[in-house]
Image (tube, rainbow, N blue to C red):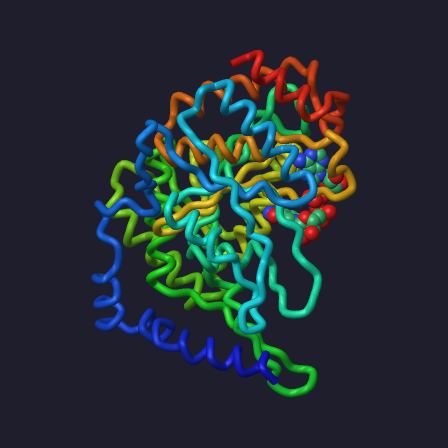
Length: 384
Ligand SMILES: NC(=O)c1ccc[n+]([C@@H]2O[C@H](COP(=O)([O-])OP(=O)(O)OC[C@H]3O[C@@H](n4cnc5c(N)ncnc54)[C@H](O)[C@@H]3O)[C@@H](O)[C@H]2O)c1
């Protein structure tokens, strides 16, 4: 069965770094090949065009995607952000039976080095894997960054939340290495490599520095997964010596969950960084603290290209009715502006969004209001 063949191939190709990671001198050699501390990980290297604007690839997405993208375009135009949008179509194609992104879309993102993405409906059918996963693999988007900040005007049981979580995005429990051993016995392999761990941990330290957080904390289960999480944690400890200005510590995942739902505010001065599965779950929990996925932005950072996206889906139930809330995509675009160094524009638009939400006159239905998508966008424009 081809499934088993793929799994075996992946295991074979993964074997080398797995062994290397745990063995003294060889591990040291691979460490030395790693990222030098002065190298900026996942930084934006795009150039302005002749007209002084950056070109940004725009995946409007499915369902409510075009409506919420329109809000972003309208607000950016009113705020004179130096960006031209290059719309791209990522409707998947099957190449040799595997889901692939159309080549013109890949070329656009590789050229512009940055993209904003609306939600994509996962096509149902044989051969298709999630397009989001395909994008992640195509552009080697190694870190998923999820900030969650309480919104004045949208009350939840928690006030003053301001967490940032960075999730390793390429391996760990989601490496896709699974085996059917014998009937009734399956095996799933969690792959942790020094190279990928170093890259995401280094990005976490650099991100903390960039956004003014004083602490980096590794969330782990190295008490149980002594080798895999143990390696991730060990690399965090080693790297922390290169960032003496950042306080480093670590916490067991279960303790983090308990502490966060009890009182999330002690996490406000920290960047949390962790392997794939923990980040997937904990980031949605953080979103819950501030009111859910509809308000949560995210950035997928790659070596060269980065893609910023709302974490909610395409909401087919409300598509085309002007009921969609564009806030998550807007906040994702703010992260994108910060990534591109357009901080002044980011701050200005962010303030207009916060002010509009705090005023509460033009909220969309999901936040308890009755404003249409474009009315909410117009209220933000009026506050710019
Ligand atoms: N990142 C992504 O592209 C992404 C993420 C999740 C789901 N999806 C895809 O989206 C499709 C629908 O998924 P789903 O229904 O499970 O989740 P969903 O997030 O699309 O919808 C869940 C609920 O939240 C509401 N909602 C979501 N976003 C909203 C917004 N911006 N404003 C107002 N209400 C909003 C919807 O109306 C719905 O009631 C599926 O094809 C799924 O694969 C894509």
